[in-house]
Image 1 (cartoon, rainbow, N blue to C red):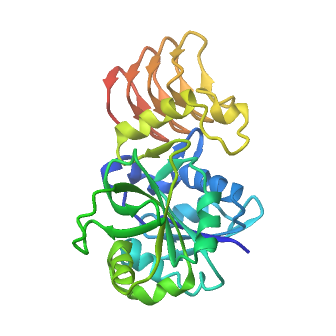
Image 2 (image 1 turned 135 degrees about the horizontal axis):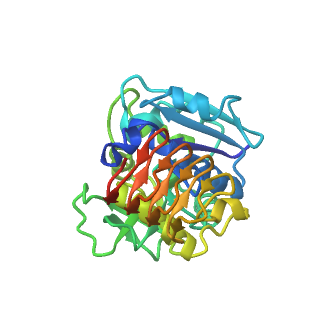
Image 3 (image 1 turned 180 degrees about the horizontal axis):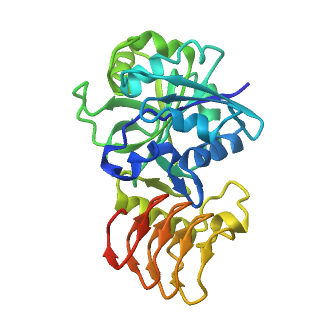
Length: 316
């Protein structure tokens, strides 16, 4: 059975106050949790079982997935009382990931880049770890030998000063042997384990995944922009998504006929938009309300909150 570990324990500090109500992987994107978007992407690549680590607002995951399953796939939740970061979090999942190669997927990205080529490359090359790389990732610090399909360094931690630097997407494949380079209980980035593996002569592979969209939802502005960018680009390529999931206004939202909602908005199920309101590039969560006559641009209206008056680039 192909497995995936989705990192969900981060605090989402840059997204506050959005993450005061939900952990980042559960904030809605196109009317469904970001975590579900990761599940959909991974299932399209053959994944049948998921694990998610939790820390911030862990009870929210039980509310979102009360049966511990999603679309017939099991979800194993593992709580981290103390945040372990990416390396420590992965080390903490070693027992669950011992069956064979597995995907690891950062829970704060929205992407439809192709996953299958990396899976095939991982097996064919005998890689210990295979990183998915791109050129449009904001930080490029993975030294890559394209001819050999190998990652040579990360953050120049080995002092290679290699000229070809690519961006790490936060998605990778690990074989069980990688866990000997991680330190159980240690709070550290997975980069530490990767550098130790590279120093030991292990083969860390890289696959360029330039197709599709890759969006980092790190702050409120990028979160709002992701809705417009994804819809305009026909995102995602996997699916299919129904009309309700790609529409700016969900069919179960209550929007007054006199309100104006542009195509870059996202108004979720159960949201209410009052008479004469004008919304531009604004996300209204399920259970959010927009008062009559309000004018919003670049805003996020959270569940149980009401936005009124004229607001620009704020979270309510």
